[in-house]
Length: 131
Image 1 (cartoon, one colour):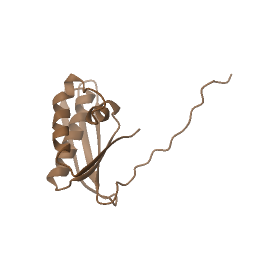
Image 2 (tube, one colour):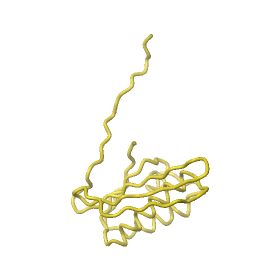
Image 3 (spheres, helix red, strand yellow):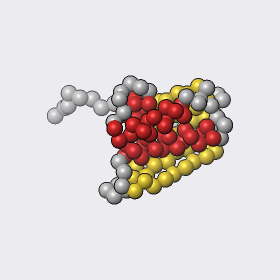
Image 4 (cartoon, helix red, strand yellow):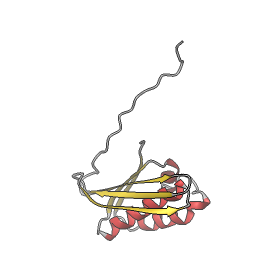
């Protein structure tokens, strides 16, 4: 039997940010009783220079992802960077931050925080990636 649908493999690899930018990769995770998240900041040559992780207890994956993005962005600004490339795999969050959709109520305050920090950047790119 043959399937009418063909699967295509897509190569996924980390890429350096543009010159003079730093890149924030963030992610969240969820188990049945716990949510957590984290971020990594890397310079334009790909070297990591800061990372952070946190435990949220009983929270949703969406809250974990949004908190990770916010915390990574805040850390980048506190380190003195204003050219920032942000990458994450949560399409809903990325679209909310890009003002393409209304954020779900549970992350509205976190998205407001993220937008506040984004206004402090000279140049910012927010990009959805697959994992």
